[in-house]
Length: 198
Image 1 (cartoon, rainbow, N blue to C red):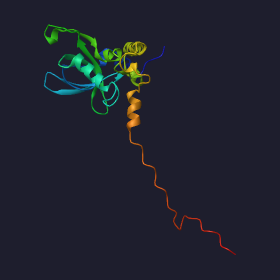
Image 2: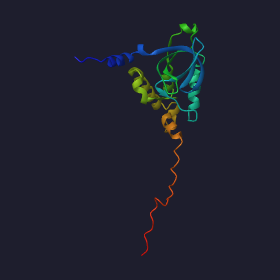
Image 3: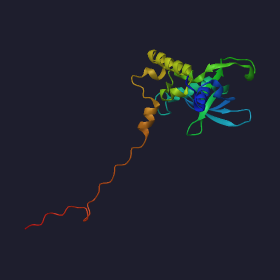
Image 4: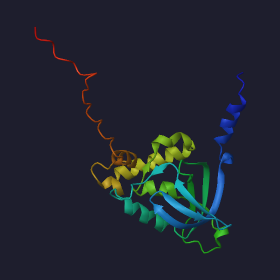
């Protein structure tokens, strides 16, 4: 029988929901189709990057539609954010869960069972971010992948275009290209001298 190392046991434990953190609060801002701001009970704001998805950027086709759809889904709503990491911009990366509208109960009593990240993919307003699939629970990764396939087949949202450009490719294309290296001017020490005429 193979013995699991402490690191191996920790990796298995962190694959379980118990390893994730829970943030609760009200959505008070929408930055774009995959980023929002949550205000917690202590009046502290948290910038949330929706995990497992990548929505079109502002200047891309459907960028504004994605933002509007996210706003319609959660702005002003109380949500649960299940998260386990911060990105390089110090945003909390997580899955946002909201209540099924309408919920007339106090926010604390409304069951939050709607996966907002998945809802954006299903509406054809975000890609499944396959690059980070290993950071998702396998069930979520399979669900998001299937939602993207179904949205694509139904030509919903961004899939109505013949060749939509994934945001990660679009961002790469927008990066300034490095300036060409200046031509080197030959100096007496490096230039070849003409052969002497005899």
